Length: 148
Image (cartoon, rainbow, N blue to C red; front, side, top):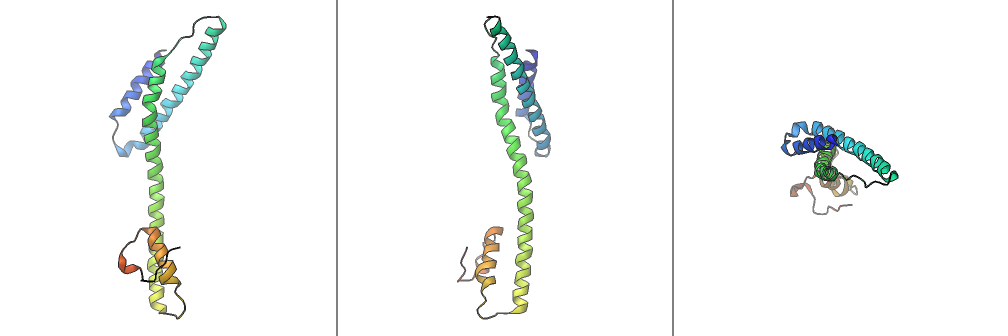
């Protein structure tokens, strides 16, 4: 099939891609090519079924598998990178929220002052926020800090 040769050439292009700003485009292109390869596989199966029905030897398409095997790591890389970028933005947003909560809770603690018997902020809340937000400065944690 001529289509398979074209798909093999398109797959070779992926080794030249390297612009992180274009990663979404690379992913769409890889997904479209993967869909075309799946459609070609279905055509090949139907064609081979007809050959078998006539008792003929089935035609093999070795470049189909090599094209799929070449495309697969690129497709996985692009999917992983796009997924990471989306989750990274969410995590950064969440960390910013936690830092605002941390700063606000410090302001409230300082405004209220120490209340005997109430260790929530210094023993539980503040270390938990720090741990999640990745704040590891030693001066933040009191000596009696315990993590959940």
